[in-house]
Amino acid sequence: MDEVFKALADAGRRRLLDSLNQRNGQSLRELCAELDMARQSVSKHLAVLEAANLVSAVRRGREKLHYLNAEPINAIAERWINRYDRGRVHALTDLKKALEETPMNSTERPEFVYTTYINTTPERLWQALTDPAFTSRYWGVTFDTEWTAGAAMTWHESGLTTSDPEQVVLESEPYRKLSYTWHAFTREHADTHGLSEDFLAAATKERRSKVTFQIEPLGQVLKLTVVHDDFDPGSVVLAAVREGWPALLAGLKTLLETGEAMPEPKPAG
Image (tube, one colour):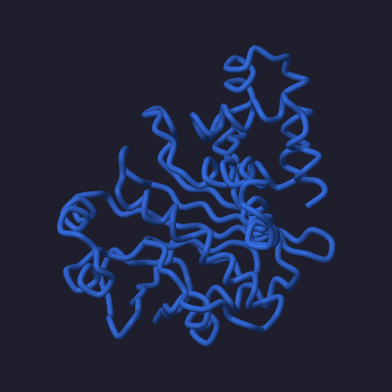
């Protein structure tokens, strides 16, 4: 947490966060132009923000794109905001809200990126992402699949089974990378989760998104980056998963580090 507070203490770094909140997924070149700052200065600020886990970087071809990451602010909020007078932590709650809200700028890249650090092993994390005994505890979801590229996936959740030919595993590199297409939105799914008619109508018209889990060992911990993308512009599904993923990944981290599941896992869309 010390790194987070130190990173936020600099006005230049706060300007970078503000810029990403307005338009997420910017390259170094775009940030330099947006803020009228020297490339070297922006690079140094980004390095500090990445070290504090306030910014996640994802490569797209030859470019490195930068995204706000709400995980450390969520951790601060859980530790401090409920223990002290909210008036004293107003700035933190505002920042937490800004990091989690969907930016309104129409030029934002339609995807969700979130990074967390977990004190576990690659084998254990892979098991937590694929084994029904784990996924049911922090997610409330289990999968029937062979976990190989091209394999079909059947989702089980709250007594509901969702099967669709387009629900498939895209990439599977044990202990390193896992990617699959998102579930279909059906009438049964909407009824089970209390989704509105407007949401269901919009979601069924959108192209199917995909989620990717990237696992990277860093010393004694693992860096887990979740990228949920391939959304249509203005996607209602993207807005839903943005709300669900932070709580779900907090539950995953808690389960692996303490052995205890967080109560009432919330679906990510």
